[in-house]
Image 1: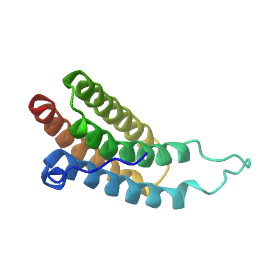
Image 2: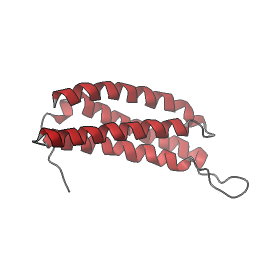
Image 3: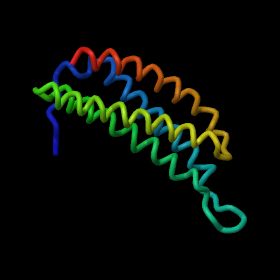
Image 4: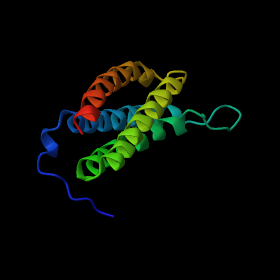
Length: 131
């Protein structure tokens, strides 16, 4: 399903921040994957590698939910999408916390992602009130 993008969307701060978070999470995941793809001595894989994919997948969902909320006519449906953005943001924050426990130098970048998520949450509060 394709969504028509509103013409004012690139100017919305929350959408810009969602794109930044997506880009940042992709870079962090790529960096972490180099350290986490190696098998352990017992032949098992690192369980944290799945969380590195989760941050990319979750951050990728933010933009389409914002578009859906902006395109929606009815306020109760807009609030449903706002709630989804909030839920995805919380999941992304939890996944980044879990990744901090991994054995990689890339985990040093995760506080930057969480800092951006905190900024995103502030924008989200303002944005939800303006819908």
